[in-house]
Amino acid sequence: LDPATGERLEGRATAGGNFLYRFHFELYGIDRLWGRWIVGIATMFMFVAMVSGVIVHRRIFKDFFTFRPGKGKRSWLDAHNASSVLSLPFHLIITFSGLMLFGHMLIPTAFQGGADAYRQAMRARMMAADTSPPSGERAPLTDLAALVAAAREHWGEPVGSLAITHPGDRKAMIELRPMNFPSLTSGRNIPTLRFDGVSGAPLETPTLSEPSAVQAIYSTLNQLHRGFFATPIPRWLLFLSGIGGSLMIASGLVMWSIARARKHAGAARLPWGHRLVEVLNIASIAGLMLAIAAHFWANRLIPADWPGRAEGEIHAFFIVWALTLVHAVLRRAKAAWVEQLAGAGALFALLPLVNALTGGLALPASLARGLGLLAGFDLCALATGAGLFYAAYKVHRHAPLSSPSPTGEESESESETESESGPETGKGALPETVEEAV
Image 1 (tube, rainbow, N blue to C red):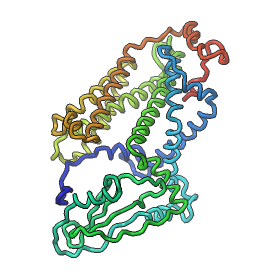
Image 2 (image 1 turned 30 degrees about the vertical axis):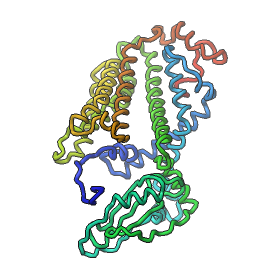
Image 3 (image 1 turned 90 degrees about the vertical axis):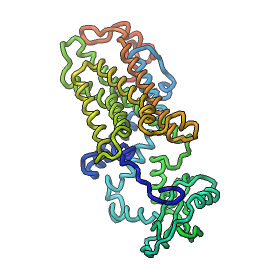
Image 4 (image 1 turned 45 degrees about the vertical axis):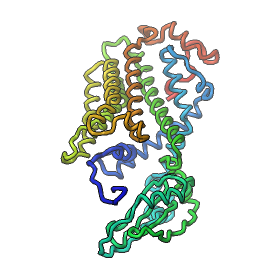
C-alpha cells in the first residue's frame, strides 16, 4: 500500500524467502501434512542424536577450546567439535521448540479434546479486526503517516504492522501493532492501536487477556523458535548459531566419508555405497548453496510480467540443485567439490551487481540511505561468496598428510599427529571416534 494514500501497489510476483521458509518445515511438491510429518520425524532423530551426543562426548568442554590447524583429520574433528559445542544451546532450543510447535500433530493424544480443539483454543488468542460488513459509501482514507507517527510516539518504537479493514469505505478501520514486544508469553495477543479509517480518530481497543499456562508455554517456544522476541543483535547471534550448526553437519558428513575412504584406498574404485554417500555430500552441501544462489538470481532475471514468475524461481532452485547432483556423479569428488563451491561463491558474490543492473538499489546507495535490510542482504551475499571461495581454495590445495598403508591402517606419521590429543587415549587413537563426534 502507498504509505500516504493507502492505494494498493502491485509488486512483481515472487516466491522470495517465503519458499525457503516453508521448505524448511513442510518441504515442497507433496502434501503439506506429509511434509510436516517427514520433517517432524527427522527433527526427533536430530534431538535424540544431540542428547546422546552430549552424553557420550566425554571431553565436551576441553574440545571446545581445542583447535589444531593443519593437522588433517585432527583439524576437521577439532572444527566439528568446536562448532558443535559453541552452538549447542541454540541447537537444543531450536530443535525442541520445533518439535513442540508440531506437538499437536505428532502427539495429538497429549491434548485434551484432540489436536483440533487445541488449534481452536490457540486461534482464540488472536485479536480479530472488525468483521462487520462495509457501509457501501465511498470515503477517502485518512493520512496514514500521521497515525504511524502517533503510534511510534505512543510505544516508543517503530510500527511493525499496519492493517486496513474496508479501505476507501466510510467504515474503514486501521489497526497498528509495534515491531517488537518484550513479552515472550504474549504470542499473537500483542498491543494494538485502532483508528477510524476516515477521520483518524482513536477507537476502543480490546483489553489484553492473560494467557493460560499452556498458551504462555506455547507462545514462549514459538517466539524462541522464530526469534520474534529478539532485537537486531540477538538476531545476528541466532543467525551465526545457525551457520555454526550448518558447519557442524557439513564437517560431520565429510569426516564420516573420509574416515571410511581409508579402507578402500587401494581399490580400483570405491564401493557403490561409499560413492553414493560421497556424491550426496557434495550435492547436499555445495550443491544446495549453488541452488539457493540460483534462486536469488532467478528472482532478479525472470521478467516481471512472466506468467508463473514465482513458480519459475522455485523451479530454478530445484533444476540447479538436480544438476549439481548430476555434476557430482560425473566428476571426481575433489573436482566436484572445488567447482561447485567456486560456482556458488561466484553467484553469491555477483548478486549485489545483478541487483543493481536489474533495477534494484546498488549497495553504495542503500548504505548511504540507511536501508539496512537491502544493504544487509548484499553484504551477507558478499560474505557468503567470500567464504565459499575460501572453502574452494582450501579443498583445491588440500593434500593428505600421509598415505594410508595397503592394509587400510593409518601410517606412523599420521598416528603421531593424532596422538597429540593426550596420553589417556593411547598412541594413534582419536580422543573420540568420528561416529561419537557426529
